[in-house]
Image (cartoon, rainbow, N blue to C red):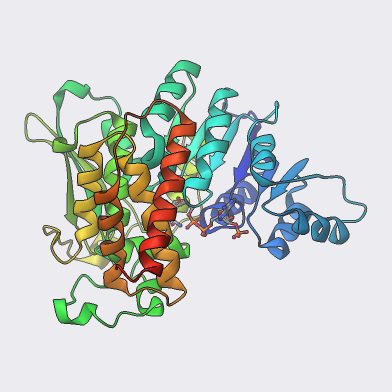
Length: 390
Ligand SMILES: NC(=O)c1ccc[n+]([C@@H]2O[C@H](COP(=O)([O-])OP(=O)(O)OC[C@H]3O[C@@H](n4cnc5c(N)ncnc54)[C@H](OP(=O)(O)O)[C@@H]3O)[C@@H](O)[C@H]2O)c1
């Protein structure tokens, strides 16, 4: 790969991960070229990105936004598509080498699967894809012999800590969690949490949905499921430690007691860059890690009673089949309702738990089935919330 131009499609280019990815591309124009971009509804930012990176194809969610884009891009040579078909077209452009999957939520599943089927390497940020249909995604990735490189900082750390080791020597994976903005809260303080409180993550600057997931610790639960599928270790071998400094991004413990970890400043550009350049490393213009300045690193057990979403995710993984897809869908709906002041912070986990308890589990064999389970979870969550069940 050294010296060779890698052609990229970025799904979710207007999001937090998408924007950081494009900043790296801008820093290394001799290494990366943007061929395709997809956005949701942030047309203004997409227009700027099109002008800067000259992709040959882009996609947005709605047809109305296609018209808006066309009117703002007169004279610019770019194909504009929409909807799921548009995302698939962007994910499968023949000359693309790697697809950066950075859409938020289960909406990322279908285009990511299409990219894998088309033989593209994947830099995977969109953890909900693996939560919803991890067994199908990993099986297809193996069939197509593609590289699926994690972008999530914890999984990038595990990926790096496993490199060069024998998997049979692994005793456990330890995912670190900052604990979010409420790690010091007492039970009584959870009653009146507002979206603004929950969005104020102490260490990471991220999109809204993952910020709320971090506050409930559902994010760590989704990451346990993601780690299970990415690295193929049973749930019993995947632990979570609270590490409020977010410097040790995750660790692998081996049979002889040795523990290998990856450390760095909390900035997603490092794991994104590693996913783009693996097995090489880019000389990023990053702040170096100043361990002496930080002084101390702390670790503790997570409190699953105060943060029930973490346990719900372990339960979903233990249930298997369509349960994780349903849990993820209910969580997406509940988080959206919380962000729009229609649901309390505490009721996010109540809605998810109730939806999971009502679901008739099935073995997961097709993407269509995962999508049906996702839809069922969304409808059930809406129904429960409008009936005041939460
Ligand atoms: N942010 C982080 O630091 C971080 C770290 C680790 C993992 N991740 C994971 O990476 C993924 C992206 O996170 P993020 O924080 O970058 O999210 P984000 O800032 O909310 O960005 C999400 C992107 O997806 C697009 N999008 C949203 N809904 C869509 C839909 N239904 N169809 C098509 N596109 C849609 C958005 O478009 P518009 O904005 O144009 O509407 C945006 O481009 C998530 O799965 C998250 O868990 C993020």
